[in-house]
Image (tube, rainbow, N blue to C red):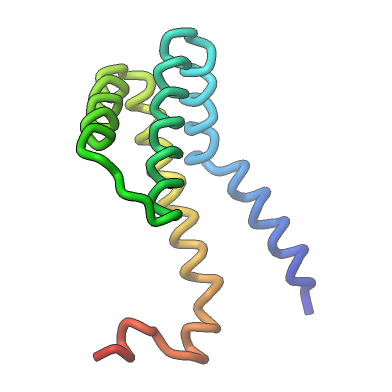
Length: 119
């Protein structure tokens, strides 16, 4: 019987070698090697993190903060390299979510789908 951790490391390797990861890494490197794009992207990330932290702590997010975040998103989306990076990130996240669904299937079968039980 295969060791579950060996299988996990095989999966990690498969992700690293996937087209989705390779393209994400290329897009990331392109942004990081452009000083102004890098600054914009880091500003975008900081803004996202701050809002997520506030949400997790149950703090109120002001209209001003929402507006600032919207403006930051608009600015980064106008940069084609950052836009491409975000697109590639989304593609890899879809793959990882699919993999997550596959590996949690035994638990779902055992306990049932909580969404279905609510009905």
